Image (cartoon, rainbow, N blue to C red; front, side, top):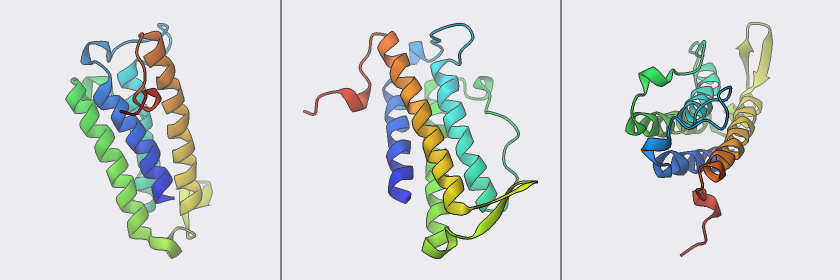
Length: 147
């Protein structure tokens, strides 16, 4: 699980670091999130896992772009969110992953099921960001030939 968590986190971190700062507010259509908002949403959603399994209250909404004005701010948040989640997975340990926690007021879930849900969610946003790259005329880091 930790490997999967870190793999998708590293892909999103690579994109956050690589995408040009002047394109961070790029949106394929006006109704969609910007590149930065996609990253903030994906990274912010990790706290539905991290906060839940560490006994804290999960966030009520996505982080706002106004809070993370620069590319550096967004990159730092993406890095921190995945690092915090990885630390929570490690702290739970092998046995702790199968324990149940209250996920929402009306739902209990195993720690590993919540983590896998967030990993999948992050992967879905990774796929959307690949499209943003292509529409901006860029090649995503994972799609570049190895040197």
